[in-house]
Image 1 (cartoon, rainbow, N blue to C red):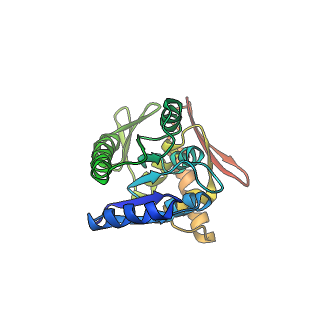
Image 2 (spheres, helix red, strand yellow; image 1 turned 60 degrees about the horizontal axis):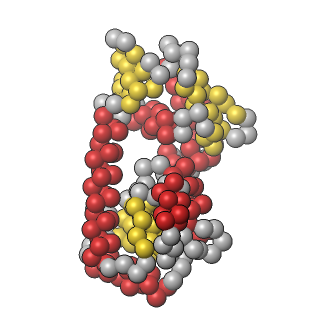
Image 3 (cartoon, rainbow, N blue to C red; image 1 turned 180 degrees about the horizontal axis):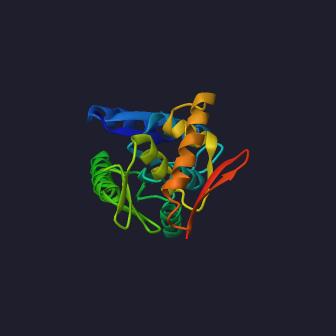
Length: 227
């Protein structure tokens, strides 16, 4: 399967050169030139990495990076920009960037940086999927299990997906519609009812730790609170 690159750039002459070169190297590249379309495209395309310009129509790259990290926390972001002051670089990293390249750049260096980020992301992803501590519980996405003390509960794949989504936005508002789209792919009534059943189950699963709660925010979604 080809590595998917979400490429956000409004300089179309440069964008076509970069896109064509990356495609010749075997990457699948989705080009977006309008900042307003990035979040929706990122969610649908399920990219492995994002190459992000800063100066874009409608919304700047810094703001986009923050939104992307909220929606897709494991997506590595590489800024490609003409903004080359130290303050710009710092702002890029603080907004969620994993790397920063100044224009003009060489394609050889860009490809090396992409490969490096993908490798680091893969290592971190494997580590993060081994076990995750949630309050007094140990959650294992790989084993599909939730353990507290000597008690181990086997999870379904769907239950594991929901727990991961909650863990990624711990103590934050999780919009119900987005949760349905991320896990089921649509927000039909039947899936909404299924989600309600799963939430009831997860409340029971986490009931042995009083510091953990799943709040229902009417008309909005949920909040997974820990501690």
